[in-house]
Image (cartoon, rainbow over all chains, first blue to last red; front, top):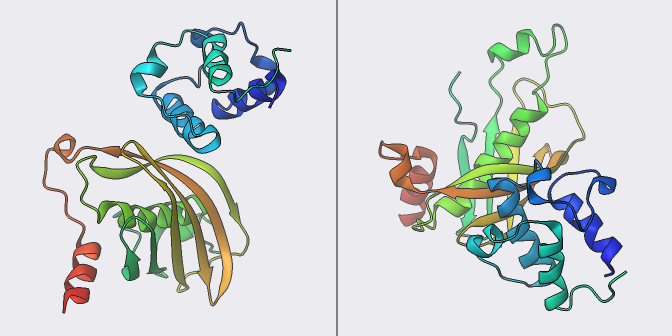
Length: 81
Length: 148
């Protein structure tokens, strides 16, 4: 998965149109990143990437960049483009 | 209108799968509007039936996480009309089952034909949040019968 694919996946998780999500997008700019969005994200990370995060881990994220950083740390993103 | 949309459980494997059914009462109020002269069960109710059936496979585990509550319809499709009097068979397959969430792939059939499918996402609400004792007489009846 590359960064573009990851951004598309993030958009899907939060039910946003793909063009609305960029690495610099803040959590506060994503209406779907609410409590249900957080659970959807936990489920998505678990099922698609086998990455297990707590709700506290998710709460610490302030932007899409923070989320992509987690994916990179777990080698789920293979480029930085 | 009461909102128990599952009549009977036919088989159940806790945390894994369920087969249940619902006979559609011909005199449901909503048929007057949905639609006059062409009564069909609304897709949202078929989805709720599938959700209630799948939730029983989760609730029967009596886990501390609490009652399974439908939180998201990941996808749903409605393939055939469901008419007054039809018996709808509800199949639920739990595809993820964790402390915080669960997923289920569900299918509704009438006379062996798929009439609806849905991929459903559940969260859990602790029993203490309800303020009353939670009862599920359909599940209780099934468990009582299967114990004999």
